[in-house]
Image 1 (tube, rainbow, N blue to C red):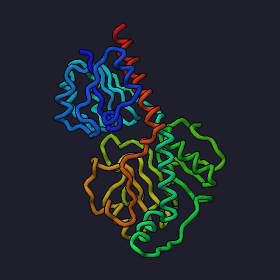
Image 2: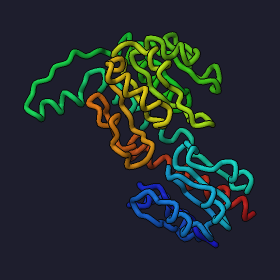
Image 3: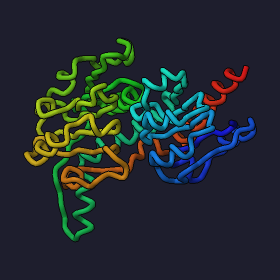
Image 4: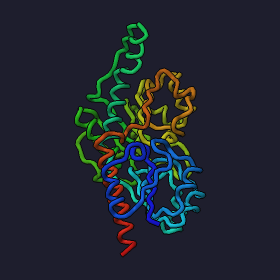
Length: 311
């Protein structure tokens, strides 16, 4: 009963020095699918007897938790818990720990990179040149641009600070963040509609609604400035796919850049194959520094819970 399940792809593929602390504490590490996202069947087979779980973004069903006969703690190497059945975990008294803020810099830097790539048409220009063409589409600068930031957690605030440092005007929406979350003369807290109105860049950093409905549908997307760049490093379901595709085809939105998908690897739909869509393979927090911070925090969190439980 001294087993700890390790499922993040980056850790099960090549390990991490911080994991040795778990072994030194007497725990056996279980990695059912090295380098791959485990399926439900993999988790059902691996979870019995595990007292701890260092978890990634893999979907976790109630059936898996039903098989968790010894589990005391799930420690995420990130902040999102949308993939976890929180209600049953609370009923069972299984602690859920998050590595809050540890990947904020990495995700925010990617969001900024995608924003700038959209403003300057970098990806389609590169692809055109590779095809022997000479595409030149006039771009925009971020200085004096109106930027809407949806979600003012650690990542959203870091992204907002980047934009402010580059001279943008930033409007932020978050119904839960403290009012003093970010203070700057060029930053304003507002409603969702106000954050979207005539925004030239919108970056999403929010959780999914409890009912799973998208935050941005046709009505919300129509508020953006013509030719806006929409960046999503949070959750694919925050945007209505059909409404977004229609906005891209009508050129109301110039670029959609996303690092997140409904499934991984994703089904390459009409939306994802659209020439004005930029895709990256969920690499927001996949930097050496972010992985280091997140792994160390996740290991700390597991040991803290297991040691206190043993005491």
